[in-house]
Every structure is written in structure tokens, then in C-alpha cells.
Length: 93
Image 1 (cartoon, rainbow, N blue to C red):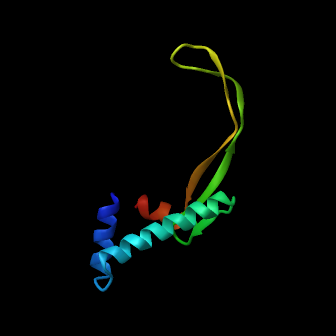
Image 2 (tube, rainbow, N blue to C red):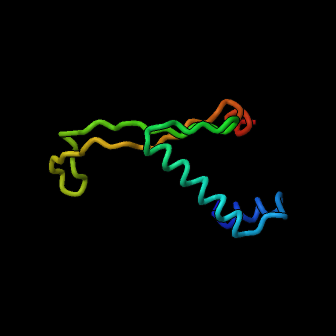
């Protein structure tokens, strides 16, 4: 689902809000999630799930798939999402 489709569906459910207000709402929501994850906080949305960071360890013996040479892959953070129990039940009906 694209951003414009999300705005269209929100507009159907909330006709009193303008498209610019809905667009701003999505921007603020995304910014709050980014800032929270940047501070290593977990973002939990009730009945939906949780966004969190997972540290990926550095690898000294990874291989470059193009030429097979050994390369170093530094430690990094990845964003993960864990679905809530209710979301899993809803999807698996």
C-alpha cells in the first residue's frame, strides 16, 4: 500500500481532515518512530506490534559475492518489527 492510498483511506474515515493535514500526520508519525529508534527506544503500538533495534555483530570473515574475497562487515543496527498476538491471529484467520 502506498502513501497516497493510506491518505485516501484515512480521508474516507475522516472526511473532516484535509489531505495536507493527513500528509502531515503521516510525516509526524514516521518522525516520532525514527527519533525513538534513534534513542534505542522500543516503539509499541497496541494490537499492532513493536518496532525495535537489533544489533548485528561485526563479521571479519564475510565474503564478497562478486569476487569471493574476504571483507570486513562492521557492526550495525537493524530495525525489526514484531507483530502483536492480535495481529497474527487476524492475519491467520
